[in-house]
Length: 435
Ligand SMILES: Cc1ncc(COP(=O)(O)O)c(C=O)c1O
Image 1 (tube, rainbow, N blue to C red):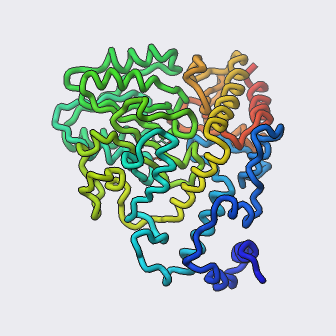
Image 2 (image 1 turned 30 degrees about the horizontal axis):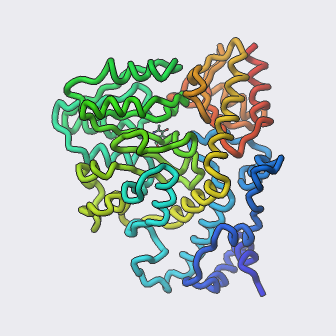
Image 3 (image 1 turned 180 degrees about the vertical axis):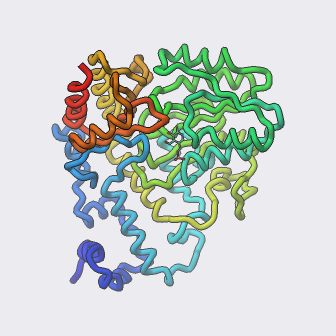
């Protein structure tokens, strides 16, 4: 008899095999992590005291072995279990659609249901209540929901830094044009020298009586600087300023406790450091502030003030396959242990920075204070540009850090699929041009 695994393999090779998939039955629950691992030949997650722990974690990914990916800051690489879970759901959805009766807990499309299970898993990892958390498509959408939903009048001031990502700042600029609010960017040094300096730049030198909103990255995408958002939010709160933190580069890279930060809203994503498929973002709004944010994308839950997180999650028909991928990525995080993942990210990032700092021609844009750094390192070499360095890394040794016009030099993200040996390959190239 054909096993399901054999069926999946056959499907990958031949469209003729598609009719066989209906044998899986719509009613069959999607596989658990352990079943998936067996079914798709994915090795179990190794024990943490295994000496080869991280190299065996690397085997959990489909990234090609002859290429090295250092661009998690743009998009994370999905583990095999995430791909398997999505593949399984796609096949079920494509073959068994007629069996679906659209019951409230139906498992075919996203956009209309509250997904409490997934939201609870994510909420636990960032210390918020499930009802405060919404699933959005990305960070841009989450930020736009806050920005467009907040009651602001002409002359009200929004303060942010001069190093925000377009997905974090553009909605505020759009409101400046539409409603006459005042959008102000405060300069913070690059590299940021200390949390105290950032605090002074943002709080002491910027807040005025007109300031109504503070928008700030938790981790600056173009330098990797971790900002003292807790201290800044506390000052803003004293002045009645609504605080929105952009955690696109934070969740999954550094420990995150949103209630401890004390912000009113926090936007982020799962498709970078949490290794979920792209198209998975989130929005947190504190319980007591959520009713103030009016609905931008409206369906039947537009006025739901019991589960406010559902109000912003509901956005019309979407891909449930992506949410299955998200859930598998959260399960994968929990399987390994979030603490271990964060420690490994920091360990690799610090190794890279320590070595780069020894080279006289290297200009670092990441902070010199290691407490302000984790998995993102940004640097340049005298006489080089970011795009040229990016090209050199790829042409010489198939290494893929990232450069772009908004990044000074090269941005190097390190995650659990990276290794010291891979970082050494980059350093070898940089040493040749930077001594
Ligand atoms: C700090 C920051 N904010 C916002 C975004 C936009 O994220 P998304 O593409 O998920 O909307 C990014 C993307 O890199 C980012 O780094």
